[in-house]
Amino acid sequence: MPELPEVETVVRYLRPRVTAARVAEVHVRRADLRYPVPVDAVLALQGCEITGVHRRAKYVLFDFTERTVLVHLGMSGRLFIEPSMGQPWEKHEHWRWHLDGPNGDGPHLLRYIDARRFGALDVFENEAETRHPLLERLGPEPLGPLWTPTVLLEACAGRTTAIKQLLMDGHIIVGVGNIYASETCFRAATHPLRPAGTLSAAECERLVAASRSVLQDAIDAGGSTLKDFVGGDAAPGYFQQQLDVYGRQGQRCHRCSGLVGHCSLGGRATYFCGGCQA
Image 1 (tube, rainbow, N blue to C red):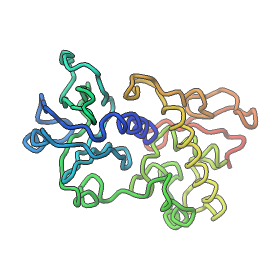
Image 2 (cartoon, one colour):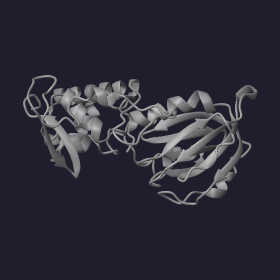
Image 3 (cartoon, rainbow, N blue to C red):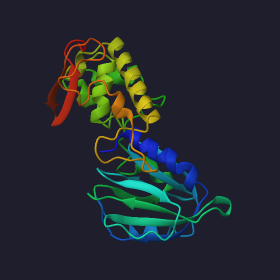
Image 4 (cartoon, rainbow, N blue to C red):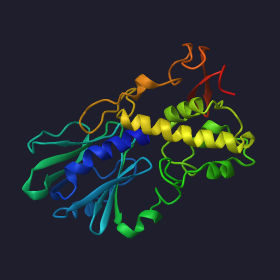
């Protein structure tokens, strides 16, 4: 599933290409993805101007004057721009917007393709963003000012949950999925199976710093492409070339030359160095 760096990569690709563009036509081929699609509300976007694009957790949010459109890529969704309007529909393409670009530029085509249909499309009033059922209980952004060692230490207090699982809990911190949780624990020299409640303030400080650096490095590399993900320009991510432990079972640790280990935690593959992760 695309994680925060992959979604941020898509948002940064889309923002300069759709901001100030007008939605000239809207086409929706199906009324359900992971959740029902509010088809009438989506069709009502025709004639409206996109004022911006931003990200919350793993959601892409298109800003309009009065409304916001939420898009989730699910497991395999792809959101991208085509310069030509005459592209045929693909088998798993579920909706598209014809856009007239800013300053008379365009037209161009925004397309959404999702073979597994685990994505989402919704429309709501701007002021309802913090109350949206998919957004209202989300934790702080890991690259924002609200993600601090104190917040993590308080979240860990009294918890027997493994720290890697806690880092993947979207109610505590958003966007840190399986790959980046393993990499964060490695950079912080913390074993992913450590009970969260045993971590000290200093260890929480290292984990917060590690989570920030891992995610920023991944964004700079265009995300990670292990299977399906490509950015809006169809380019794969390259952060997988920098991975220290994820997917490297049995290989030498980049830090201590020990062997990278592997286990299943919460049904997810987890990688670590038994030599230098306490």
